[in-house]
Image (tube, rainbow, N blue to C red; front, side, top):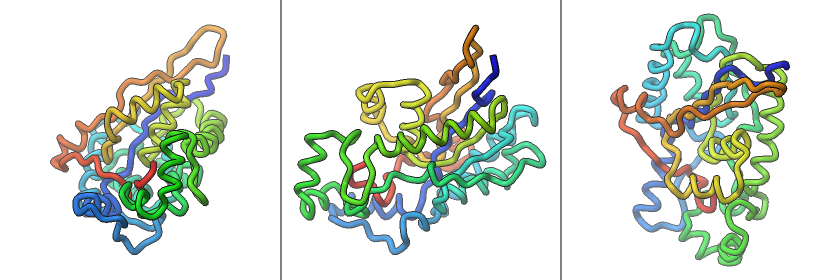
Length: 254
């Protein structure tokens, strides 16, 4: 049977961003709003996030040439594109790897009217949305002008179809966001709502952590991707860039 999956797939959350830092400050001060000027799509890496991206790039660079990523797919958000660029600059890809492919389906979950609000801010300014989220759960709650996790999963189904169509048998790196990492796990591993939300509740996806899959052939099928590691932070820690689990600037009701 034709192999439809990459031979190896890495999913990396972007490095710490200015939005992560601003969100952490807002939560620390019990504020309703997160103070950041840019659109979410334009929020850059922090200086620390740059060091994290460099560290994970060096981790990939330490692999033999024939084991490094061949193809990179990235969210269009600046912090993800900067992370992928720094991984490349650190030698983390094969020599002559094509330019990263920007795919808007890998973008951050959109929060609509709840964007830039802390959880306390949602309770204060949009109590009806806070109550609806409690009733529906984060998997199905869609804030006005925003997305539910199911909406993110819908666009990621399409993105995975593109990966299988164009990048089968290749080594593929995806650089994206926390919810995207979790929703890709939900799809690839055929999880239930309860299973993926339990993983989410157990802890945040660390900045520049690595989630890795390897292809496993199966008789009379197109095979499957098998999880080898999740939320792997050793590349960042060993690279001297302390691990961070910071929320994004649009974190409120993710």
